[in-house]
Image 1 (cartoon, rainbow, N blue to C red):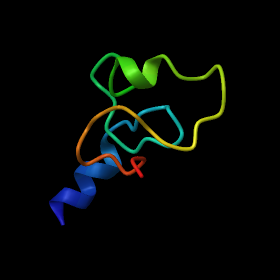
Image 2 (image 1 turned 30 degrees about the vertical axis):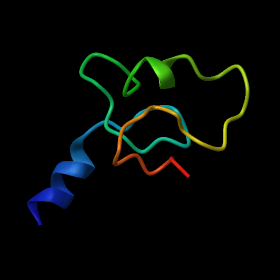
Image 3 (image 1 turned 135 degrees about the horizontal axis):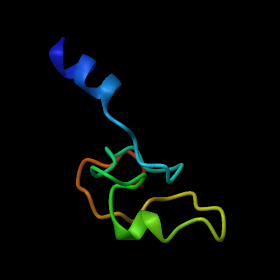
Amino acid sequence: MADKDDKKNEKICKNPPCGCPATEGSKYCGPSCEGTGSFIELDCDCGHEDCSGNF
């Protein structure tokens, strides 16, 4: 149960297909996601193994 509560409180990466937690002091989980936004992406290439946006 604590895991679900922790997930609710963490900030999620602002790259829409990504589901990783954002790094502290940033809106994104890493440089790959921070560089997105110039076009619509369907897949996330952040490289985090547990990312829900990787297909």
